[in-house]
Amino acid sequence: MKRTEKLQVLVQFSLTEKLCILVSAVLGRLLRLLSSLWIKVSGDYHESKAFFAELLAAGHNIKKIRDTNLVTVYGDIDLGNYCFLVRRRTSDIHVGKLVLMEKEYRPLIDLIFRHSRQESIEYVVDAGANVGYTTIFFKNLSERSVFCRRAGYRQLQSSAGKYSA
Image (cartoon, rainbow, N blue to C red; front, side, top):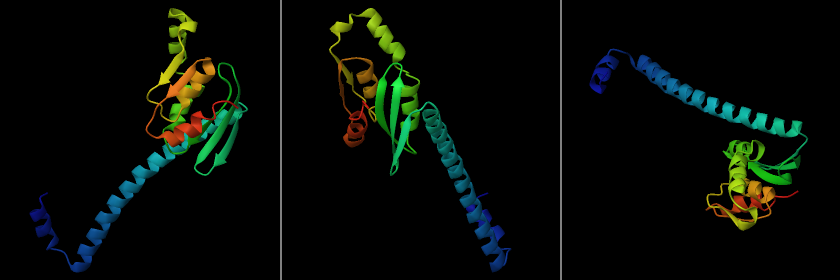
């Protein structure tokens, strides 16, 4: 319905009825907005809760520091003991789970070591370091020097700087 048609329809109502229609429309939009926001927040909460529950069940330590958690992992079969920071309500939980818990890069490492002499690899460069999880993975998996680069240096430094427990 075009704006002029809507205005012609509204002329038929009293001022009180017009106010009710306006309030109803505004509240309808607000409820739709809140509903979509609730779905997003609820999904983030459940992913965070499952991630931290899995870490605690495995015997690891989680320490809350403001809006961040310091996770200390003990006795990982590939990586040994290490620490990393997780900012809640960010992609850190998803990335941390993929890189550190599910070891998404393990097949790549195995392939590289299978097709080249391990001693010929001196450095690993993590050119798109997010918060340092891949840097932690590579540093703990091999004895190579790992260099990482990211624009948001403070978070990277905080997380990757604590790579061993």
